[in-house]
Image (cartoon, rainbow, N blue to C red; front, side, top):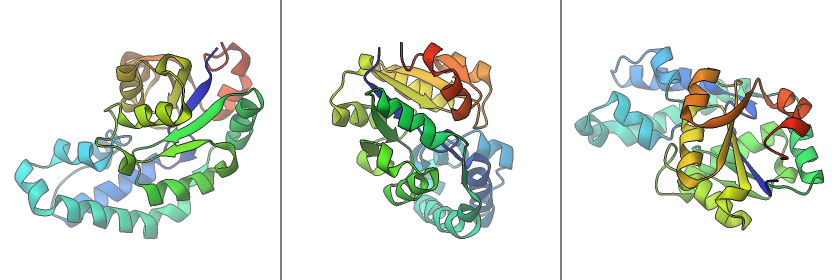
Length: 220
């Protein structure tokens, strides 16, 4: 039985993937780059350090990458953040896990300030033991850094933790560290993509995971 659960948050605990994709699409367009909503959406789950090189050259990143990412952050906060909602049964899921004695962390590619806002939207601030943002690590997902910091802070071995996320990048990051990965379909990726990335099980979302908890990798 695992001793710790590490959650992603965007697309896993809160319904924000499409909104992030729109903000990235708008930001690229603002700086003169044609990146479709679908293309931007396919990269949600990565941090900006990994998403920008998919669409921009090294020269473009040096020229205005930081400015583009900063514009995206402000634009998302003003235009899209008010639309973000939690998925159903999120506090109930985390509360049940805590009652069963499991440690809980949230590990995200979001910046620290953004992560705190998302935790508030999810309503789980009192239910988590640790939180890790992109500012706590050298590289964002799919690098394993955020999960590495999470298991270290939780004082558990990677083999004793389960990571839950909605993107292949979560599963890839967890697998590189030796953490078991479980996927949810509440983001934008298919069950096939999540399993190919390393997920040992996939559920429709947090509510379904709660309903199936006793038969899930989270408790056995």
